[in-house]
Length: 157
Image 1: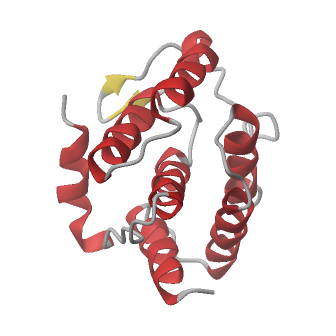
Image 2: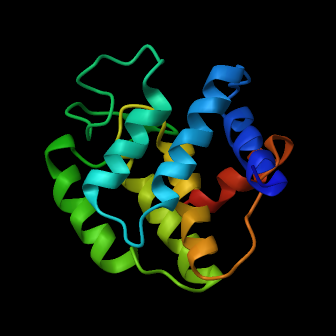
């Protein structure tokens, strides 16, 4: 595996305070799965989520599926669960083909604001962000877990 991809996946997990090898292995599988596609759609995004979350404490219904419950993001209520499939379709239409660094960052922020899953949104979102970067011949963006506070500033409305 490319050293930069490994570093990105390790740091992405570390942002979530997840350092177990099995979850790094699952992140690696998720990365390689999504990398095989030339486009984003709800199915490959949900399948990536399933790969990342398969050994987690999420219920079987929550793994690989958009959420059906309300969740909080940093103290704010995320968009209502019933709107997630529509919001994700809109996200794919608007942001699925993001090309520039600015567009890709905006796409990532928009994805995280939707918060389509009960958990693993950050890890899935960072994989999507770097998938978009690679598809557009940009370098992998490694966000060091020590810089998580600065990264979280991206999401302030």
